[in-house]
Image 1 (tube, helix red, strand yellow):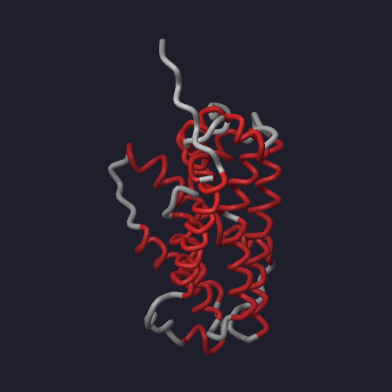
Image 2 (cartoon, helix red, strand yellow):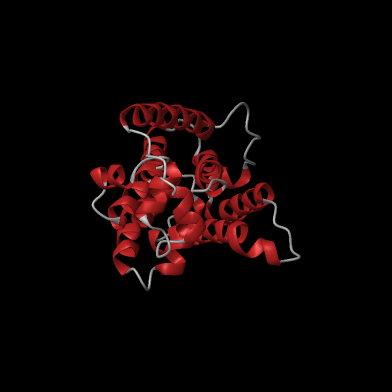
Length: 236
């Protein structure tokens, strides 16, 4: 999956071939076809293994978080950047935006597997905050979009626009200011008058990242043990 992710992000969906993925992974082309019938199925697996688990952990965090809703929102914004935005996985969003008109099926898949669950996650945060008297009641749509849109912009800026711009955007400062603007617009009651205290100790998402990295390393080791190496190319 690591080789497939790297090639999809570097080349885009249209230019990525299964034989190139096999070569990058160090396995034969036939081995790839044992697991994936076509490129679309491979792409879907890349998304499901790299994005969907993180969204699932985010939903679990919302359901079980013990702190305030402003602190939870900070955790989610920071976690999104640490687990997705600052990693190669962010390139999948750029790919979808660039190629969705040519490949509507994968765009629809991404919308259903990633975009809708992401909206639902933040809708749960809003509902939680209203029930606890910490957030004003606002319609989930378009409020969730107003939360997610700056995050998508930051990903695109880092992966596309920053190389040709004289403007520098520090992701940490961007997220801090985004959080403050969101809290100013959303909080009510005591939460509006109480500054969010500094984070003490590691964020929850940092533990999630550690667990995901360990699981990925274990899965890769098992995959390497199962797959035969690619045969060397014969030369005349």
